[in-house]
Image 1 (cartoon, rainbow, N blue to C red):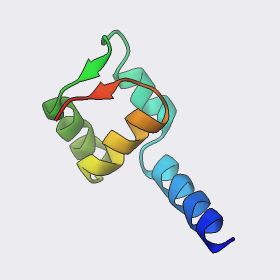
Image 2: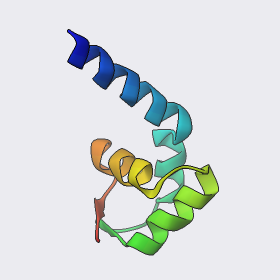
Image 3: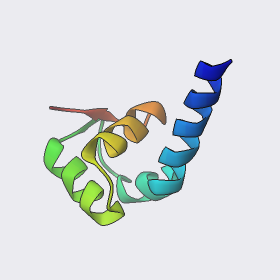
Image 4: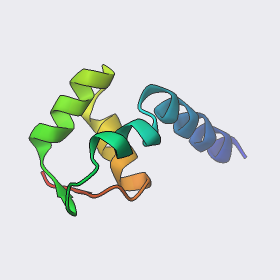
Length: 67
């Protein structure tokens, strides 16, 4: 149960910090892959770690992050 609760808490925090809708809007028109520079720019804009952005992109199926 603790693991499920932690996962839910992390997902809530990620959504609060970098909302899927905001990322979707900013990534509109891009095809499949998203480069690390774009991820870094989004991280700066949302003031979060690039890892948060990369996870949100992957978790919401917004594209494939290239490293």
